[in-house]
Structures are given as structure tokens and as C-alpha cells.
Length: 339
Image (cartoon, rainbow, N blue to C red; front, side, top):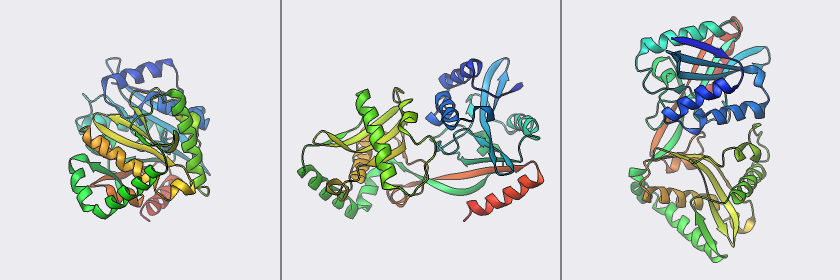
């Protein structure tokens, strides 16, 4: 067993990472392209700390970290920690089934970063059955701090019955929206130019709707353009008279759907008729009919996600201090996470 620390995205890393991608089913947040782009857009190439684990010269795991400098602290975080809804290691599924195997690897990683980082802060950890194998959640002491929501689609008809009043409102608003012109639901926009135009519009709509919110560096259309050719990326939309009025950027894998970015046009004529909610329900209905297994709302505990879900996805954080000031920061973060 050999563990190498890489401090840059280079061709060797790409080769090993893509090899693991091909062998294992990984969601988009674990892909090489997602992580590399996040580092580039944040302009912190010099902060990369990626650990590759080899067995007989074959890569079996990648732990993609970076060193975040905040005030007087050096903190080890997941690459993509703010943009990735489920960050985590890239693991060969044939390994890491036993605690002692992972424990030896983790001890060596801890040793290698001991004098560089005050605190290890790895949040958004989950062991949900629809996600990837995560030995940190399985074998380390993590603290639960929150939940995401999802829909086991085998229970979708039950949800519809329980939400009868909401469904009546949805049908009424959809009927009114249809009366305004030629109304169309599109499961997946195919034309690349249309995809780019819609993504640009979705970013503008979101920023206009939440103008007081501070947006992350990667919340720009150019970032998402890099993934539009990915086979598993889907952009669903509503059109009225040939113009987009709502969109959802999603991801499908193993008959599961991941809800990444929703947005809708802020305009009096259509806004009052809840185009975002109509698109969401139309999409879930479509996925249910296509025999999808699970609809993952991903990061965020907004009320509508809670209302339409029938399953919780517990989130945990792994915190480990290496210095006195790291220990003090750890105490502060624990208090903050449980507010």
C-alpha cells in the first residue's frame, strides 16, 4: 500500500482519477472535471492537497482536499465544499470494507497533514444508500448536524394523496399558465445553444430573486457550461410561447435523480402562477412514470423540499484538531452547526 500527496492537477492525477471513475459509479461531485473546475474557478491551485492510495501500483482511492486559509487558521476541506452537495472520496468499491484497512490509511493521511493544518473540517458527510461508499462516514466518529430530503418514488402516489390540496392548486395554476399561450414541459433540453441560454437565464433569475444573498464563485454560467456535454446531466424546463420560464439542472445515475439547480423567471404574469413548483411536480411525475427509484433534493432544507419528501438524508461532519487554535475553532464550529 502506498499513499502519495499531490499538490496539483496534472496528467498523472487525471489518469488515475478517470480510471477510478470508469470502474465505479460516481455522482458528479466526485468526478475529476467537477473538482478540477472548482479549483480553477476559485483560483486556488496552490492550495490543493490530494491523497492517492495505491495497491500494487493501481489507484484504489483518492481523497480530494485543499487547504483553506481563514483568518489565522489553516483548515483542510473537501475540494468543492461549497458547490458540492455530497463531497467525499473517490473509492474503488472493491476495497474499504473493513475498519482496520481504512484506519491505517487515514492515520497516514493525518500524519502527512499534521503540521500544515490546524483543523480537519469535512462536512456534508452521509452514508445514504443511493450515494457512494464513504469510509469516513462508515468508520470515523462523525457528528450529525442536519438533514437533506429525498423522495423514495415508490411512495410518490401516497404523497400525492396526502397533498391533495396542494395538487389541486398545482393543477389550477398549471391550467391558468396554459391559458396564457403555448405551454410545454421539456424533460431534457437537447440543443446545446438552448442549454447555454437557459443556464445563463437561470443564473440571472436566481440572482434577481435572491439579490441579498452572497453567491459562491462557481455560481456563474461558465462553470456549468463545462458539464453540459456530460451524458448524465439533464436540463428540464417549462416553455411559454417558445420562451423558457423555468428550469431545473439535474443529474441522473443508477435510476436515481439529483436536483442540483432550480430557477424560474421573475415576472408578474407567470411568477404568480408558481412555474418553479409546476416544473418540479411535472418532473417528479415524469421520473415516477419512467420507473426512477429516488429523487434526491440535495443540499438545502427549504420548506418545500421537506413538504414533498418521504425520506431524510442525515448529514454529518468530521472534525479533528491538530493544534490548540484548531481545537478552539472546532468547539466554535460545533456550536455553530447545532444552532
